[in-house]
Length: 431
RNA sequence: UCCUCGGUAGCUCAAUGGUAGAGCAACCGGCUGUUAACCGGUUGGUUGGUGGUUCGAGUCCGCCCCGAGGAGCCA
Image 1 (cartoon, rainbow, N blue to C red):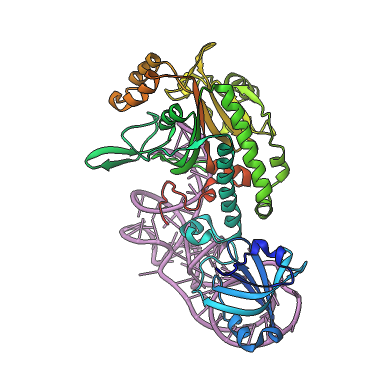
Image 2 (image 1 turned 90 degrees about the vertical axis):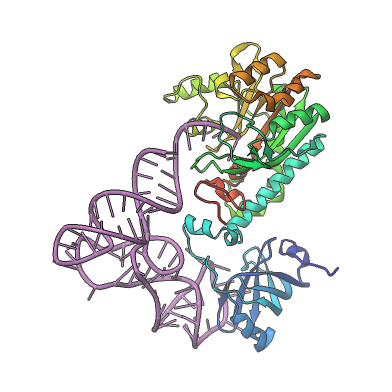
């Protein structure tokens, strides 16, 4: 196969003639010199064509180019401080693949609604380029971390006969005449694979039919969910710390340019390393009360409470031992305090809120069996889950890391809708 | 589901109840180092829909549709 050149490698090809294949993002012309801003998915590069060098025919073809026209540009890579990115291509030839029709997204400002309607095109722009390349790096880093620790990636089903967590609204569908639901978490199935393989994780979409309408919620979001046999609450707090640190570090190393595009304050990210502060839910409630919040012990934190708490720390904070009523049925009870569970949430700093939720799972058959009945869950559908407590039950624990919230925090962007290529939101399923 | 705000040119916005405008984009022309380039010109409108008040409605009122921000719930 022929050699392919990519803009991200331009620095390695200084003074050599290469061909880049991409799209025109913007163009400036000064009569006898044209500046073409070209992107190829790996980066952005300025290409300079002067009439004397390329000849009249190529120059006139370049003048007719429109925004987002596709083209192959051949030229010599030069270092030049005047070029955005420090390198530019001194053009010798242009091969126009297509002169694009009038492009709806102009270099000027646009509203969110318009941009979301054109999401399939919006992802071409530099800010989205940066965010989505960071998302990919985040996924890779998470997998690399878990793989290096001996975890097996074992996927869990999307179509399920009943709810994982009774309370949340599920999308309903039909499975050859039977009622079925779209998964909102792989966790229960993870517990089964963990009993078979020890350390496992799944990564996939979670679907929740909640009419959520906030910058922290999507209808369809992705989680990476590890589950570990013979592990307790402290074990997973440690792994969460190490995993989040490894992921942040990897983004700093491999996506420095993207963080620069986003103007992210990387010092805040460099500060992320173990140990993370750990406080109990009860201590968190005291902090909130001292801060003047009107909050009663027992319920889960809302957006405002999470913001107050996370802004008090420079690093992500682990809040553990939530009350029974604030957590799902499968959480293990704290043997030292019957009112709380062996659960833990990680709140990202700078007001980003919960990015990880997890805990130790109920081990005892009769306790779990009672809970299933108390929650009025269809017992037949959970017999397999109870089996895990009949045949060699062990203490085990796991957590789920929300990819979009994590990416939003790392990128320093306000709304998670930009952290996934095609967000599914209330009132918005297209494109 | 609830609360708040909004819908005017392709986009972002302006317009005391009295002739519907600007910048950008597009198109034409100029410019050999531009950085959201710049300069001159041209084109571009069923003011979300519907009913009402009024001599007169983009503007005021009712209903509906759509969107944004936030809440609840959660990752």
